[in-house]
Image (cartoon, rainbow, N blue to C red; front, top):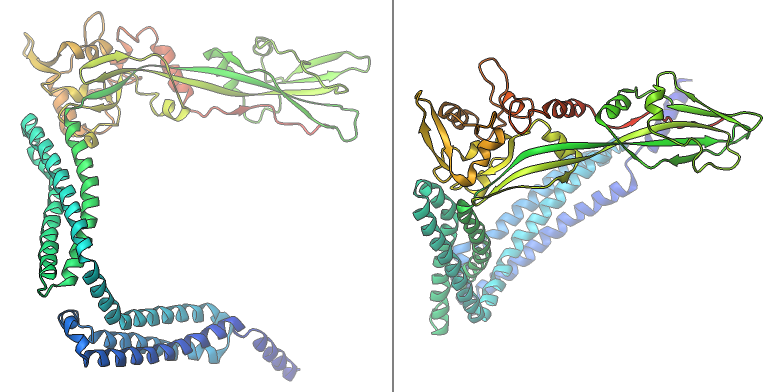
Length: 529
């Protein structure tokens, strides 16, 4: 019995050897190492013959500077590493011949292939560099012409940017360091391009006059100039736009919001007498709901199997039975015709529903001194729910004297980001010694938006200091010492304002509704009989 067991194990071992493809790939890898060593030797011999010839003289400067002869040593080192890896890791695994080592063999052969590829690349460097020198030598006149064009384009782009820089410095002296920081990378690239252009011109002049010319310096700097010219053009346009954005001013405050709710009643009908009934689905036209109606239907449980059920009697009549958890008055208010678009022979049905909504915003928009309020604009559910707490808040604000990428996109009380900027108003002190911000005419709507009892809302100096030093760029709802929010839909400033006081209860019901997801309610599809 023991002999039989060992025999079976031996059979299993043979059956579980390395796959044929893995062995073949390993054998090809071993052959590739030997072939690469032979190729390195052949290339090196050819190079030594070239060095001994008179043709080598024009290339000596490049060969010595770039150590062409030493590249073959690097190639042999890589090839030797490939052979060592094969002998230490692959050969033992091939002898072991265990299928479980398939992945390990693949990893090592991949590593060896990379090493042989690197060896080949080193061995090809002397010939490739020689070809590069020859190519530049043949085309230096064209490279000079292209480089001159690239240099001119670079100078023009930089000159335009520097003019905009000087203009921005004059208009916004306090931002001088930030202006220079945005121009400096373009300036550096332009300086590099100017030096590259000088080198190309110098070496091309030598070549034209029959003097020794460094074609590698010429070619490399022509390439650098080409790359920099494209980059400088793009970066200069970007920086120019950033500098121009200092003069732009805009904001968008959420001035109003509403959600219009709908219900779509669905019916699933079938013939209860059929052995395998087909279920006919019908969706009634969607109906608008009041907020209270929406609240009722939205409160029904997800597990509700149906709103109502219709059954036909043997004598041809039918009756509608309400689910005991559904209020009949709410169903009747929908004025659903139970058998509208009824399929012939169907005698049973169940009714369910889905809820949906359309969402709208109004904005108070300011742009470069002009202020207006928009009409209702439809927004998606995500936008609505993201800003349901932000009534009377700036959704985005970009003050005069700031860069476009410094705009504030987190909710901020309307106009607060503009406070402290003399473009929009100035600080005043009342008879009690309290410092507050007084808006210039075009921006008084910020005060009116949050004002109460016929008076504009005034931002105090101490509050602005707190926001500016601690919360700028963060969502800010202005908690007071009692931890009550001043701003936003839930804030008492909005709640007592002229504009929203009468509607704030409904606004806050909207907020409460949208703490939950609107989705299907009831109407689980029946399979019939």
